[in-house]
Image 1 (tube, rainbow, N blue to C red):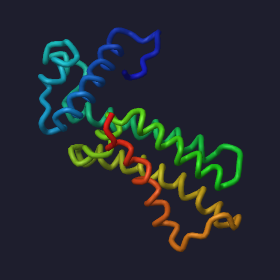
Image 2 (tube, rainbow, N blue to C red):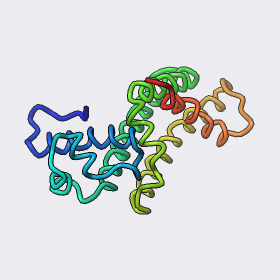
Image 3 (tube, rainbow, N blue to C red):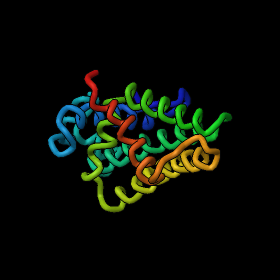
Length: 174
């Protein structure tokens, strides 16, 4: 379930229920196969409740994607900024990233595979978060090269390869 502080108001709790229901519905039917009626039913609400809290089904996907990518960026930043050698930090990034995606494989699948359903503006925002995640990884790889710990002929390719190696956990069976 979405993290909702105990002090959250009723509207926040309802929005979180709708987000959780949207994640489950998108996972079961895909974004395009899911209706707002499906989301409302999964949340135990009327279809009108979706529009009280979110402008559209696409907005729900955007919120899910933004929160998922921001959480991932925060996790990668923490591992990249931890004490230790570049090798230890890169290992921490890979371990934490893969664990995070494996534990949250349902939302991670949606966040990674439903991007094309986002509006161009929302897709661009998510693209910025993805670039920031890649930059964190690249910074650690660059530090490893400078320290003589890594020997990669193409830093860009190594950075790009690090993502799919760990996000593939989203396709594992639950």
